[in-house]
Image (cartoon, rainbow, N blue to C red; front, side, top):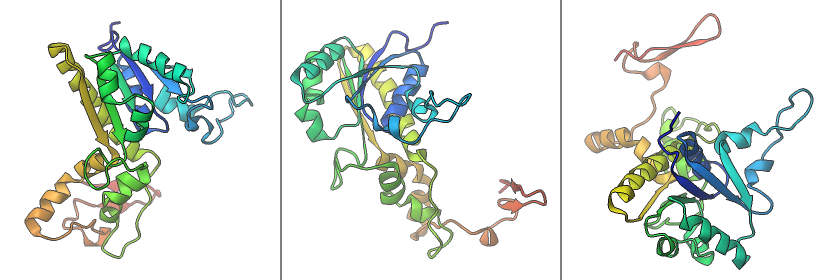
Length: 256
């Protein structure tokens, strides 16, 4: 069966979860994804032990969540020969995905200007912590710090101004931002196909988290007061609330 991206090749240089999750989704759509890792491998490969199957730990489910369907090569980016290999790969690819900070992109000659000079129709896609403009531009960031912390999402999630700040589950912000990057890449591919001109796209954990709170920001603009998560005891309607049940489960109503 034909897949929508089975004629697309993606070169990926990233680690952990956010940007890799975007490339994994594109691989699901049929793209050939070549993941470039350091000689020691993506740190996600050693982030916890794989579960035992028939008494043997030989499959890393955690790593495979965001790296399924990919090919992989290991190189030393400080070796000029390795950069030449990546440039050759990019010359025949349609997409380059990375989460490298700007200074590292320039240091290793993987910045948009360099790669689009090699392949003028390439889509260069970057996922960062805080974006490429503004006072926090190009700061390193993670799911918990950039998506939940800096964006104010943690503060908005607690019940009342003095409520306990809840902890998010792993990679919720990473995967949400990965979806945003997928959309940007697909749009850029369409434009590159129509015009023959390469595109540069980016998103960030922080920017995506702000977008997820757009409804709260709109409410704040009207009410001129911060939006707070209401406690169960302080909801406006009993039909828009959650309740514990006798079987130790919960039921959630959404009938405003």
